Length: 80
Ligand SMILES: [Zn+2]
Image (cartoon, rainbow, N blue to C red; front, side):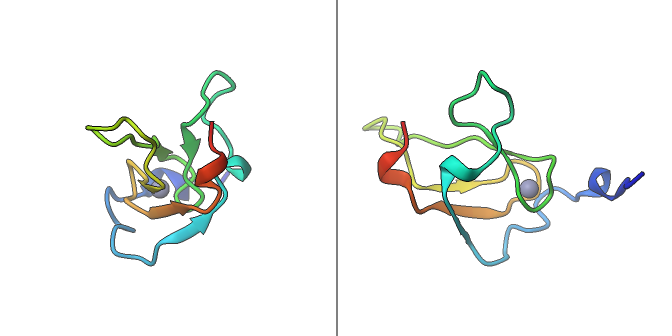
């Protein structure tokens, strides 16, 4: 069994290059979640998808809550 995925350090990928991904191709955390996806890098962290606090519009940039990996959604315009 691969136990390495349980050894992710919080924020360890925070300063790595931004990953450009399609949100629709990410794996959702659960079938009930429209936005929350699993992190491609650490596999255990969550990408929450954020909204602008003033306009409530979706923000195309995201962070893994665990490893800190930064993402940019290239299909942001077509996100639900
Ligand atoms: Zn992660």
